[in-house]
Every structure is written in structure tokens, then in C-alpha cells.
Length: 604
Image (tube, rainbow, N blue to C red; front, side):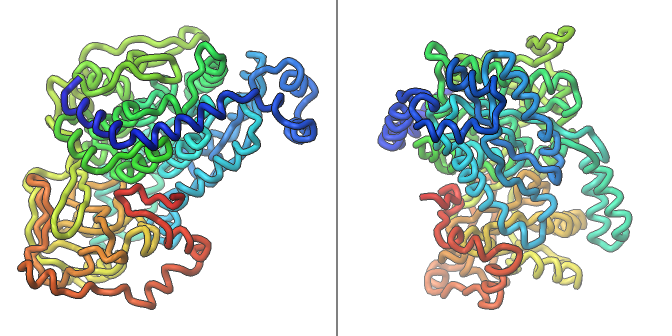
């Protein structure tokens, strides 16, 4: 093991000792109880099995066979989740073949950031994670199950399911993915069309045609954003079957993997193999997830989500932990927006198995950890295949099949990870540096201050931004408006950078896994509405974003900076942020939410 990885892990363990011990004590107490049907009253049991076939009732009550709960994020609006429609029947059939039973315990909401980008619905997106966690808890609150299968893929859904499951940490759990859509219009071509549209060179019809060619079928979007980063992290945590992440929904291998997930869950229930999720997800497993994120240049959203996930397991991590790991974890993958390849090309080049094998061999991963397949990460360096109708795993080739997509740890794209921490008098922020050209790692320019992304877009359309500048887009944090992603800013800023201007973005909002080649200091904490220093910035202030030194500074004399009165959010905008399209229902979450670095948690 690399010394720095060991040191960060030990630091996390020491910091978390009391909360982790209390968490483990709670789940061990719950795990010692008799199974649900034996500890519940007769009326409770009768309600739980009333709609089941007679043979299932017999298995649960008399034969005491394993009873599995399915928590599904199915809806047929999200392309990634549409394939889940038929999964419950498949899971029930496989459970029956193993002498077990399965019920859909509940569904959780699943919203698409791609649909809500730039619209009021995006202000509910971050909070949907905790709503999903609560929905998972409601589904499992019937307390009749011996294990849970968790069906979800996209941005807030996987972290929400994981947080909810960890609050039922006494149960064994297996995550079941559904795979990416086939490759369509390339991500780079799609981005070029967006930039043409932003400049008025093409119309809406051409833009819609391009977007429809990119997003065209069932499965996850093919760029390496939050959804696909979720899948990489679950593999690194040993919560998927090895190699399950990026198999197409229609591939026969996908059905075989789903059936095997049921078999795996049944197998980790008996006492000899009993590994509940709360015991499995320890500080080493959390660090493995962090390492995998850094090694692949994954979504910046996970610097928020995995803080919350860890907290759900009694473990405390922060952005300094990410930064210290990033200093020693090599960048091994180039997947859009960090490169031109999509996730299907990533999978073909070796995918998660290649990356995890290289990280393991380089001493960047904790190997002797529990997974749903037993102990150790060796199984996750293999890939699944069908031998006739039998599911098998085999070793990957020693070398990369496409060095433009994945590389070995001995010859990485970079010796350090794809995400960095920035600190200074503007607060603490993160930047996804893996996609940013080296000559843009440092930008020093006058500030242009905006209180919404619409204001910046209007200034761009009016031709007011044809110069070097740092866009400060504030009042976009969790308390202000739910911390929406600001993807609509990417095309205009990319256009300006393409013209040769030195531009950057500084915001207390999010940019997510689609953070691209324009340098963006995001998640600035504390946020402006909470009195953060972004509220002190004025038009014309010289701002220095330095990803080399890890600094984010307003170059204003200290005395002047200290004397400035923070700007206030316009009352009319504050009023608008809290109304229409369901936003009223989330007022309590906005009031109670923690900072981005604290995971934007609403439940503590």
C-alpha cells in the first residue's frame, strides 16, 4: 500500500472512531434478532404476505426461506431506469429457483438532471438524494426482509439508495445495474453542436436532432458523468457483481448478471457468510471508492455525495482527504469529458476491471476488504462473460487494448488524480482538472459577478463578455436554491475560451460529471447565502484560480476585503427560488441543509 493511502485511511478511522463504533453497535443489535416472520406478530406477517402466492407464504412462514426486498428506482422517463421494468419478475423467478422469495418493497423517485438542466426542477435535484434515502428507508421499514436488492443507476439515485441502505446496515445488500445505452452521436460532436447553437450559427431543429442522436435509447447516457461514476464507485466498493456496470441492457450477459445478483444475495445471508452492508462499508471501502473516482476523473458531485454516504455508515471524510489521495493516485482513464471515448469504449478497453486491477497492483486500493463476492478485490479485476449459458469471469489482458482510453499505473495520463481542492479567501472549492488544458490551469482575470446563470447567458448573448474574465455565479448553493447544476454555462464559456479569452467559472453551485475544458471552481463553501466570501466579490475584482498551487483568491487588499459588507440575494429572486413546481415542499430541506463539504446532508 502507498503510505499516503494508508495514512489517509488511518486518519479517517481515528476521526470516525466514536461514530463508527456507535453505528456498528446499532446494526449488530438489529442483526441479532430473529428473522422478520418469526419476530413479527401474526397480523403483521399476514399483512406482509397477503398478496403473495400460497407457495411463497409457505416458504416465508413455514420453511423460513430467505425473503428478499427489492427497492427499485424504475420509471420509464429515465432512459437508464426504463430497463428495470421487467427486473422484479426476473428476480422473483431466480429467488424461487433458490428456495427464496422476493417482493418489491417499494419504489423511490428518480429524476433526470438532463431533463431539468436550466429549469426549476433542477433545484430539487440535489435534495432528491435524501428523499430517495428516505424512500428506501420507508420501503425497508416493514422490517420483514433478510436482504435487499437495490435497483438504481443515475446521479442522485445511487447515493440515495446507498444512504438509505446503510441506515438498514444490518441487512446484506447487492446493487443491480442495468447498463449504458449504445453509442450514438459522439459526445465531442454533440458539444460542438451546442457551441454552434450558443453562437446562433444553427437553429433549434439542428440542435434537437443532434441531442436526439446522442440520447437515443434505453440505458445510461454514455458520457462519464455522475451516473456512470456511480457505477465505477460501486464496483470499487464491492457492492456490484464484478464487471456488472457497463454491460448493455439488451446483452444476454445482463440477464445472467441480474440472476447472479440474486444468487449472491442469498449466499451472503447465512451465518457463515453473513456480511451486512453496514459492516462491509468501512473506512477502507470508502477510501477505495474515493481512489477509483480520482483515478478515472469522475464526477465532482461525489465530493458531496460520498461525504454523505460515509456519514451514513458512521464515517467522517472531507475534501482534504480527497486532495491528499489525489496527490498519489494516478489518472488511468480518459473518458468524455476527460477524453473523447464514451463508456462503451471504456468498457471495451478494459473498463472498471482494468482500472481496479492497476490500482490494486500499484498499492492504491485496500485489497483485504469484504465484498458481495467474498473477501478481497481480486475478483473485481476480472470481467464476466457467458460460456454457453453459464456465467463465468476471466482475467483481463495484461495491457490496455486502447491506450487512448485506459492506461496502466506504470504509464498513467497523470501521476495525480483528476480532482483537486482549491482554498483561499474565497473559501474552499473543488475543480475537475483532468479535462482542462494545461495552459488554463491558472487563470487570473477581473470578476464578472452574476446572481444566476440566466444573467450570464444574457450577458453573453448581448456580446458583453468578449474579454478575459472570471465569472462568479453566486447564490447557487444548497440553502439558496438547492445547488443546481449549471451546465447551461458550459457552451458560452467554451465558446469564449475557444476565441482565445482566458475565462473561468467560480460558483457555489455544481457542474457535475460533465465539467469540461473550462476551468471551474465549484461547490464553493461556505455558500454566499450563508455568509460565504463569494458575497463580497465585486465586478472588476482580480480573481486568481490556481489549480497548480491549489488556491482560489480575490486579489483585494486584506483590510478592504475584511471591511466589505456581503451582498444580499435579491428578495424577488429569493421568493422565486421557493415557489412553483413543487419547490415549496423543499423549504425545510433548504433551511436545514449542511454545506457542500459536509455532504449537503439534510437529515442531521
